[in-house]
Image 1 (tube, rainbow, N blue to C red):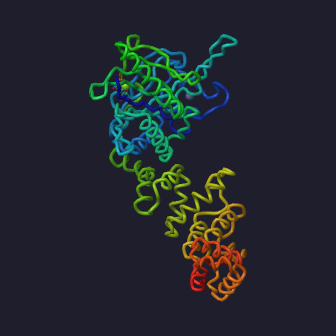
Image 2 (tube, rainbow, N blue to C red):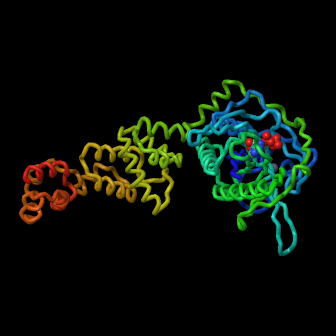
Length: 470
Ligand code: ADP
Ligand code: ZN
Ligand code: MG
């Protein structure tokens, strides 16, 4: 039997606040275990949480980044469960009234809908030492602010899921919400997956695979689940609703707990945190902090700037890089040439020697001047790339560098004519063969003439003279 997978996601992302969500402890990654804990985030009785305003703002930005509706009213609830990494024995989350509702991300022409996005606190980490046979609790992560983004079960392919997660990570980075480093756990994905026979529109029973921390693991886990569930249904069995863990070493998933043992979380309104009211004006203020999202930039680069889809996607894959492109291209109006300089020339240099764009020895102004020199045919493309390399290594302005290295192309047709005459005299046989019909030799003769004149060679002028003489 052929089956169609049905997939929905729950994505957890850590908010980039300075302090934790309900106390003043630093919100950072790494460090010694338990060096960022206080009575509040370690759950001592009698302590009171105070909501971090910035966490609310960042969560609202995330809602805006995915085209959701930020709610004027949201509130917090207690989700009760016991687990050693959560010393309070309850998690403060938003259950009834999330900060943002709705939204979507479009992938391959399909709108993949977001149900809602809510704020909650992260739990600590357990570290198991198999050698000493002990488990240790590190509470540094307790109380780190998270958003959870819950999608509708709209996904039908692995690629859709992967592209959605990549786009989500990029948008959260653009909006300054989360650094979205999946390998460090600052963004983690739970995948809910069921299968249904081809042609059916009745969803099957789903399994939930928790805490996937790479795009690749997401793909492998879904692939394994589709196979596992297909085999169960093919054999006449039934998929049970359960939570499973993906094992990266084995490439399989194992049951963690089934729905029958599932907790009754006994949600109730958190009595210690008043509800959050955001006026329309406040929401608009937050909206103004959110930059243009990468999908909109891609549309603009293709539609208005004439870039290819590949070029646009490469530029927006990093916000600083894209900001640099935008500023520079806007200053010169040379959209294509700026894209070439950055994607061919600059990217090569950055690959060899990774440097944040903000620390380059030249700015958007120098790059725009360089693009203009090239656009106006004052330098040729080789010189443009060479100047870029020089600016990258030493700084300086393009006009100055072009002058110093004799790269300004000469409009001097006398010099060009002399060079062409010399080349034709030295390559009489090639010239004859060209006239006899071997058209490929034109390029060879051009190359020779350019070689005679060096960096100031003006291909357009040479071409014209060569054409005339042949
Ligand atoms: P619950 O209330 O039991 O947590 P939700 O309706 O909130 O369930 O769904 C949780 C996640 O599971 C969402 O991401 C949703 O898209 C996904 N989901 C729901 N039903 C299915 C299904 N039949 N197959 C796959 N995913 C599903
Ligand atoms: Zn604390
Ligand atoms: Mg749910």
